[in-house]
Image (tube, rainbow, N blue to C red):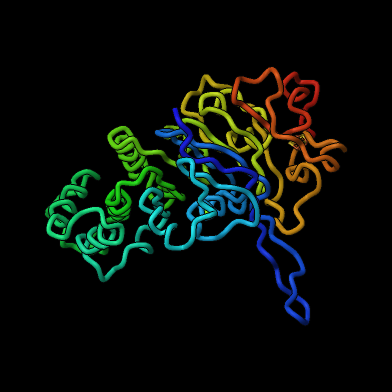
Length: 335
Ligand code: SF4
Ligand code: MG
């Protein structure tokens, strides 16, 4: 399968101004040297607590914010080299669905107007066909075509998210970035929307970048998962490996926090202390060392490399100095 998106050494440092002259006195290192690629038709998830840089990464791909450093290649083309107008055209291929569909749907526009506007901006459907296409799109996302002249407030949260999905589909994108797309929905509605996304993926050969703070949410939809902490990738693996054989203490902690559907699976419980530190002057060495129950001296001194530690499955990488000793039981948690 071909690689659709390639993110390399992405850095996003936001300046903090201060002092008498409004000089840059510091930086928020929101994303700090992140690399990954997504294959066509794949669902890759970025997971981590708020402030880990997952949404910032999504925004950089959409070029809502230009990154400080790094490259973003889409379909073999350098996205960062495009000017504003070229990038607007590329938005036909890269769509986004946000957490709160209500905030991103204009309340004064009917569903028809919302969908027709998307088609018009990207020039995908001729004017006289737009209504028919809008009705078809509504049915594709499991809504009733008769509802095309209704307004966003007449729909439930889950239905509004379906309208957001229909709008994204209207321009026939290749990649959809789902930024906490189901986080605000009830669990049962969440499952329905996730199932819909899976179905649409098969039907239209869509590629998804799924951004979420909760590993439970991305469990069923993901092919591969990246766990981020304070702007860094700490672990990457295919879904099965990540859930059954996680190696990074932070991933294990996130997994401890979600209920296990299978009581047979014995989970190693890892309890985290405190909150995520500030991304301004993040902790030295391994950024997780201030909260990691396995931390030793070296953890505060050296940045661990994201790598495959030999005994791990192919494609599985973790950034931790002590992966081997933790796996063998030589190094236990300090509780
Ligand atoms: Fe914990 Fe050290 Fe591994 Fe970081 S490098 S996750 S602090 S054991
Ligand atoms: Mg976010």
